[in-house]
Length: 280
Image (cartoon, rainbow, N blue to C red; front, side):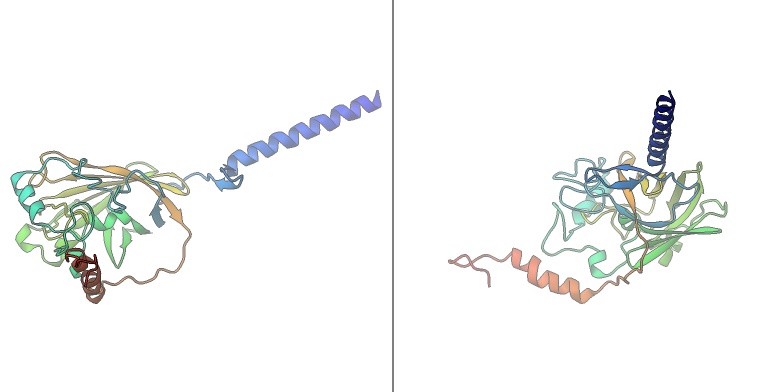
């Protein structure tokens, strides 16, 4: 009888330990394909600070390996219909990359002009929250997003000098996990993407950052530019992953590097081969 009681006690203890272990596992992580435990920590409230990169294989990545999230594939099938003004701007743009690339390009970014917003946002980069603003580090530049409750107010186009490259941005929390950014006040000298998609100085941009869990941030963007597009431009959502913090390497535009790439790659591509198939 004592043995049976002892056995029952041991069985109950094992069951309790096993149940506790399962609960702990559910709270701290789950098994991935390699059998390793990955974090599924809950998202912190009203916090999107960190360095964020696109998840490999994300559908917002272009079929031509563009990092912009727009203009994917031959024919730019996801781009809204262009107005006559927008079509003329698009035809005049000569990108150095993508399905629309041309050997002698006029990409402002490749000439070391500011790439601007929203083009720089597609890579996201690092977000730093301060008491009255969010600072977003984008490659070799940054922008500030006011979070002090001020309304979005911009100067008329003729008064937009240096600020027109990055526009004016204000942000607010829609709920504990979604941060919304509204921007306007851009000039029309930058491109939406490296594929040469244009925009006007009437463009308005809305970004939505939703923190799903500790390591995951969903990014959505809508471009409202009736001078360029006949409908709203709803960019394909991107899934971003938190990257471990570390020292950032400075990234500066170097005209010499672009000139060498032009000389060694693009210019060679338009040369006719000789009778032996060689390009000199």
